[in-house]
Length: 217
Image 1 (cartoon, one colour):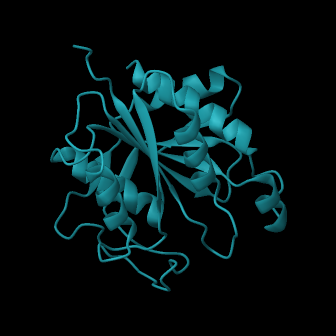
Image 2 (image 1 turned 90 degrees about the vertical axis):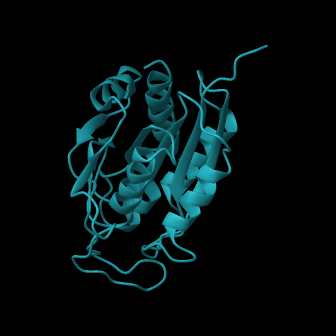
Protein backbone atom coordinates (compact mmCIF):
# COMPACT_ATOMS: atom_id res chain seq x y z
CA UNK A 1 0.00 0.00 0.00
CA UNK A 2 1.32 3.46 -0.93
CA UNK A 3 1.61 5.83 2.01
CA UNK A 4 -0.44 8.99 1.72
CA UNK A 5 1.63 12.15 1.67
CA UNK A 6 1.06 15.52 3.32
CA UNK A 7 -1.40 17.96 1.86
CA UNK A 8 -1.27 21.74 1.60
CA UNK A 9 -4.16 24.10 2.20
CA UNK A 10 -3.35 27.67 1.19
CA UNK A 11 -5.71 30.58 1.66
CA UNK A 12 -5.89 34.10 0.27
CA UNK A 13 -8.26 37.00 0.77
CA UNK A 14 -10.76 38.59 -1.59
CA UNK A 15 -10.17 42.22 -2.67
CA UNK A 16 -10.85 44.91 -0.08
CA UNK A 17 -10.35 48.59 0.60
CA UNK A 18 -11.57 49.66 -2.83
CA UNK A 19 -9.09 47.56 -4.80
CA UNK A 20 -10.30 45.34 -7.63
CA UNK A 21 -7.66 42.66 -6.98
CA UNK A 22 -5.83 41.02 -4.12
CA UNK A 23 -2.40 39.44 -4.75
CA UNK A 24 -2.89 36.96 -1.91
CA UNK A 25 -5.94 35.54 -3.69
CA UNK A 26 -4.15 35.42 -7.03
CA UNK A 27 -1.03 33.77 -5.60
CA UNK A 28 -3.04 31.16 -3.70
CA UNK A 29 -4.97 30.25 -6.83
CA UNK A 30 -1.81 29.90 -8.92
CA UNK A 31 -0.03 27.79 -6.30
CA UNK A 32 -3.04 25.48 -5.93
CA UNK A 33 -3.11 25.03 -9.70
CA UNK A 34 0.60 24.32 -10.25
CA UNK A 35 1.22 22.47 -6.98
CA UNK A 36 4.27 22.37 -4.72
CA UNK A 37 6.95 19.69 -4.61
CA UNK A 38 6.68 17.57 -1.47
CA UNK A 39 2.90 17.74 -1.15
CA UNK A 40 0.50 15.11 -2.40
CA UNK A 41 -2.11 17.77 -3.13
CA UNK A 42 -2.58 21.49 -2.89
CA UNK A 43 -5.90 23.25 -2.60
CA UNK A 44 -6.80 26.84 -1.95
CA UNK A 45 -9.64 28.71 -0.28
CA UNK A 46 -10.40 32.39 -0.80
CA UNK A 47 -11.59 34.02 2.41
CA UNK A 48 -13.95 36.99 2.69
CA UNK A 49 -12.54 40.12 4.30
CA UNK A 50 -15.14 39.90 7.04
CA UNK A 51 -14.17 39.64 10.68
CA UNK A 52 -15.71 37.88 13.63
CA UNK A 53 -17.00 34.32 13.68
CA UNK A 54 -20.51 34.67 12.31
CA UNK A 55 -21.98 33.54 8.98
CA UNK A 56 -20.06 35.01 6.07
CA UNK A 57 -16.90 35.60 8.12
CA UNK A 58 -13.36 34.63 7.19
CA UNK A 59 -13.29 32.38 10.25
CA UNK A 60 -16.34 30.42 9.06
CA UNK A 61 -14.84 30.07 5.58
CA UNK A 62 -11.57 28.83 7.08
CA UNK A 63 -13.41 26.25 9.18
CA UNK A 64 -15.15 24.96 6.07
CA UNK A 65 -11.93 24.77 4.08
CA UNK A 66 -10.13 22.83 6.80
CA UNK A 67 -13.10 20.49 7.23
CA UNK A 68 -13.03 19.75 3.50
CA UNK A 69 -9.63 18.11 3.95
CA UNK A 70 -11.21 15.32 5.95
CA UNK A 71 -9.16 13.58 8.65
CA UNK A 72 -5.88 15.41 9.17
CA UNK A 73 -2.58 13.70 8.42
CA UNK A 74 0.86 14.12 9.90
CA UNK A 75 2.70 16.65 7.80
CA UNK A 76 -0.37 18.51 6.49
CA UNK A 77 0.26 22.26 6.24
CA UNK A 78 -1.99 25.31 6.42
CA UNK A 79 -0.54 28.57 5.11
CA UNK A 80 -2.60 31.73 4.90
CA UNK A 81 -1.68 34.67 2.69
CA UNK A 82 -2.65 38.31 3.02
CA UNK A 83 -1.89 41.60 1.31
CA UNK A 84 0.54 44.15 2.69
CA UNK A 85 0.11 47.69 1.39
CA UNK A 86 3.51 49.03 2.42
CA UNK A 87 6.03 46.29 1.69
CA UNK A 88 8.35 45.38 -1.16
CA UNK A 89 9.15 41.93 0.25
CA UNK A 90 7.40 38.83 1.53
CA UNK A 91 6.90 38.85 5.31
CA UNK A 92 6.71 35.53 7.15
CA UNK A 93 4.82 36.24 10.36
CA UNK A 94 6.00 34.88 13.70
CA UNK A 95 3.08 35.80 15.94
CA UNK A 96 -0.62 36.61 15.95
CA UNK A 97 -2.10 38.59 18.83
CA UNK A 98 -5.54 38.19 20.37
CA UNK A 99 -6.64 41.68 19.36
CA UNK A 100 -8.89 43.16 16.68
CA UNK A 101 -8.60 46.86 15.91
CA UNK A 102 -9.45 47.82 12.34
CA UNK A 103 -7.92 50.79 10.55
CA UNK A 104 -10.61 50.53 7.86
CA UNK A 105 -13.97 48.78 7.81
CA UNK A 106 -14.08 45.18 6.65
CA UNK A 107 -16.08 44.21 3.57
CA UNK A 108 -19.24 43.94 5.69
CA UNK A 109 -18.79 47.59 6.72
CA UNK A 110 -17.78 46.70 10.28
CA UNK A 111 -15.22 48.69 12.26
CA UNK A 112 -13.75 47.13 15.40
CA UNK A 113 -11.66 48.82 18.07
CA UNK A 114 -9.65 46.94 20.66
CA UNK A 115 -11.65 43.70 20.84
CA UNK A 116 -10.28 40.15 21.28
CA UNK A 117 -10.15 37.72 18.39
CA UNK A 118 -11.17 34.94 20.81
CA UNK A 119 -12.87 35.99 24.03
CA UNK A 120 -10.90 34.55 26.95
CA UNK A 121 -8.21 33.18 24.65
CA UNK A 122 -4.44 33.34 25.08
CA UNK A 123 -2.73 36.68 24.44
CA UNK A 124 -0.77 35.49 21.41
CA UNK A 125 -0.01 32.45 19.30
CA UNK A 126 3.21 31.70 17.44
CA UNK A 127 3.55 30.28 13.94
CA UNK A 128 4.53 26.61 13.86
CA UNK A 129 6.51 27.01 10.64
CA UNK A 130 10.32 27.44 10.64
CA UNK A 131 10.11 31.19 10.02
CA UNK A 132 13.82 31.93 9.51
CA UNK A 133 14.32 28.91 7.25
CA UNK A 134 11.30 30.01 5.20
CA UNK A 135 12.85 33.44 4.68
CA UNK A 136 16.17 31.91 3.64
CA UNK A 137 14.39 29.69 1.12
CA UNK A 138 12.69 32.63 -0.59
CA UNK A 139 15.88 34.69 -0.66
CA UNK A 140 17.73 31.71 -2.10
CA UNK A 141 15.58 31.99 -5.25
CA UNK A 142 16.08 35.74 -5.41
CA UNK A 143 12.84 36.90 -3.80
CA UNK A 144 13.10 39.47 -0.97
CA UNK A 145 11.70 38.03 2.24
CA UNK A 146 12.00 38.79 5.92
CA UNK A 147 10.54 37.64 9.23
CA UNK A 148 7.94 39.85 10.87
CA UNK A 149 6.91 40.10 14.50
CA UNK A 150 3.60 41.84 13.84
CA UNK A 151 0.75 40.69 11.61
CA UNK A 152 -1.19 43.86 12.48
CA UNK A 153 -4.65 43.87 14.02
CA UNK A 154 -6.84 43.51 10.91
CA UNK A 155 -8.10 40.39 9.15
CA UNK A 156 -4.63 38.97 8.47
CA UNK A 157 -3.77 38.80 12.16
CA UNK A 158 -7.29 37.63 12.95
CA UNK A 159 -7.22 34.66 10.58
CA UNK A 160 -3.67 33.76 11.62
CA UNK A 161 -4.81 33.65 15.24
CA UNK A 162 -7.85 31.53 14.39
CA UNK A 163 -5.69 29.14 12.33
CA UNK A 164 -3.21 28.60 15.14
CA UNK A 165 -6.02 28.33 17.69
CA UNK A 166 -7.58 25.54 15.61
CA UNK A 167 -4.20 23.86 15.13
CA UNK A 168 -3.59 23.89 18.87
CA UNK A 169 -6.67 21.73 19.48
CA UNK A 170 -6.15 19.44 16.49
CA UNK A 171 -8.82 20.99 14.26
CA UNK A 172 -6.34 22.32 11.66
CA UNK A 173 -2.92 21.16 10.44
CA UNK A 174 -0.33 21.36 13.19
CA UNK A 175 2.11 23.10 10.83
CA UNK A 176 0.53 26.48 10.32
CA UNK A 177 1.57 30.03 9.49
CA UNK A 178 0.94 33.28 7.66
CA UNK A 179 2.74 35.17 4.89
CA UNK A 180 2.11 38.78 3.94
CA UNK A 181 2.63 39.54 0.25
CA UNK A 182 3.21 42.98 -1.31
CA UNK A 183 0.71 44.68 -3.54
CA UNK A 184 0.97 44.20 -7.29
CA UNK A 185 2.81 46.99 -9.15
CA UNK A 186 -0.42 48.30 -10.68
CA UNK A 187 -2.04 48.55 -7.23
CA UNK A 188 0.94 50.30 -5.68
CA UNK A 189 1.09 52.77 -8.58
CA UNK A 190 -2.54 53.74 -8.04
CA UNK A 191 -1.92 54.10 -4.30
CA UNK A 192 1.10 56.36 -4.87
CA UNK A 193 3.63 53.81 -3.55
CA UNK A 194 5.28 52.45 -6.73
CA UNK A 195 8.25 51.02 -4.81
CA UNK A 196 6.07 49.01 -2.40
CA UNK A 197 5.15 46.17 -4.69
CA UNK A 198 6.14 42.81 -6.16
CA UNK A 199 5.19 41.06 -9.38
CA UNK A 200 2.83 38.11 -9.10
CA UNK A 201 5.49 35.86 -10.68
CA UNK A 202 8.02 36.77 -7.97
CA UNK A 203 5.43 36.39 -5.23
CA UNK A 204 4.50 32.90 -6.42
CA UNK A 205 8.13 31.90 -6.87
CA UNK A 206 9.05 33.01 -3.37
CA UNK A 207 6.07 31.34 -1.72
CA UNK A 208 6.62 28.09 -3.57
CA UNK A 209 10.24 28.06 -2.38
CA UNK A 210 9.03 28.62 1.17
CA UNK A 211 6.51 25.80 0.91
CA UNK A 212 9.03 23.40 -0.59
CA UNK A 213 11.23 24.13 2.44
CA UNK A 214 8.31 23.54 4.80
CA UNK A 215 7.57 20.21 3.08
CA UNK A 216 11.03 18.95 4.03
CA UNK A 217 11.06 20.30 7.60
